[in-house]
Image 1 (cartoon, rainbow, N blue to C red):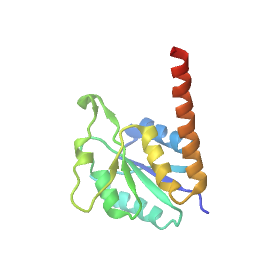
Image 2 (cartoon, rainbow, N blue to C red; image 1 turned 90 degrees about the vertical axis):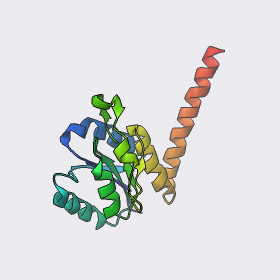
Image 3 (tube, one colour; image 1 turned 120 degrees about the horizontal axis):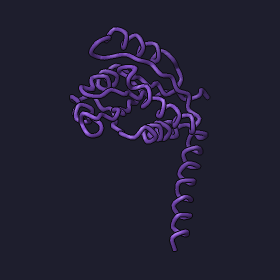
Length: 159
């Protein structure tokens, strides 16, 4: 079976730190990642060429889009690919968090998931792959078990 691929597509290099967090979290589940930069507003032809390249790749894939403000990238990507898209907008000082409104409001037929935390975007990607990939599913279960053990250990320490 081919190794699952997470294509992390950011709107600009300013989003790199956020994207690296997503990539590192994906690797904990055994997922391969690739980081790319394209803007739906400024470089639509470049964005389409990137999406066309990865759509031609037969590996199972999920796209994670990282764009703030007017997040056309997530809708643009979702309308251009057959694989799941997860929008993970970066934090913004201007909005006191992430600017989520343009990620949440999509036209009919465009349905990227929206996840704000980089590690949780990776977890959702892993769970999507885990539906058909037992190895990834076991990685998710192991991660959940570690998280549960931490809570029960913490509970025991306060009793």
